[in-house]
Length: 84
Image (cartoon, rainbow, N blue to C red; front, side, top):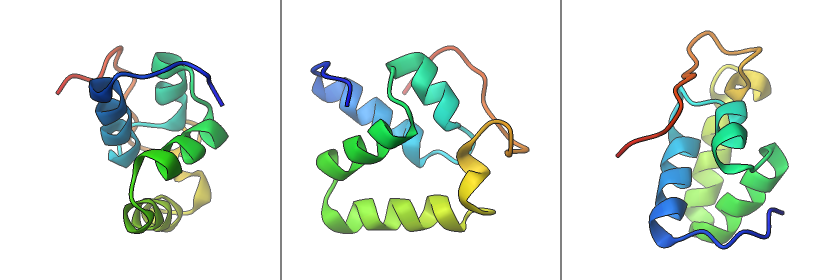
């Protein structure tokens, strides 16, 4: 996994992006340097077990396993930065 130490606010931004339906894994990778597998591990570490499990179920259930990828998604954000 990316060895960068994220600040608490960066961790919150990454988690919010991962939960957002319109933000793909590729956008998260471009902005934070975490590929899909690294993001899954990141979410497991930074969320409770139940929250992580709900997130994984949501990502899988939302129109199939590839739905969070730009190539398979109909609605994708290509924005440069996620702002809260």
